[in-house]
Image (tube, rainbow, N blue to C red):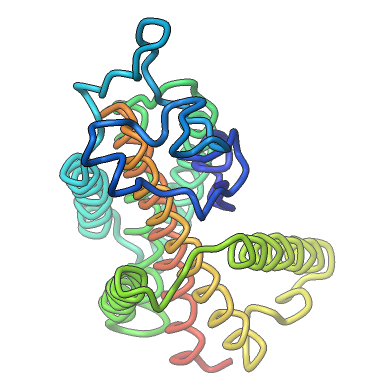
Length: 293
């Protein structure tokens, strides 16, 4: 399965060499007998290819990994990555003043941190193996950007906006996780295709809006202010929530496949990217609802 999240689109925890084999799952009978249902060419799952299967002797079943990723690995590394984002944001909030005298400098630092964070996100997305130092460096710069932007919005537009956005992001995360675990959200081929189409369409529309804003001034086509801004903010959050469900599915697949433990960093990075997106859209929505426009 491939996600619109750039972290997962490169390699992800996919079945059947990138095709979304949502029906393929560990079978109880195979697990009870010790067979690996995801090993290449096994009768338990003849249509799937496990990218993490370890090759054994000819004719022998593939041996189980001794360094397989677990949910604890994903939780721990996600906590480290998100924790660094929060710490860097808090430091930037308190260290970088955003009053009129220092607003220009603060915006410059925020833009610089955003550019560095974006470059690091691309580097991390296309590296052959996850790099914890680069992932944590990305988290630090992303935190600086979020801290300054949140402070500016809270100072000039909507006091308390950052806390509202944090609570909103946590609510979306908890809601999607509960819905996913209880089966209310089922990640199928159709769901995946819908999310991909919606994400691509939304991003193209926002790029067009940005171009109009750059060359025409103002807010471009008006998709980021007023009633249209509220509608598109809600749409962006819903898309982010759907991508979050894809992330959960990919983590679940990785654990089922026996992905190597280092891939937990990839999962943590992908979840962080998605949650940052949801937070930014939530902050933007709060600012629009609280602002004059």
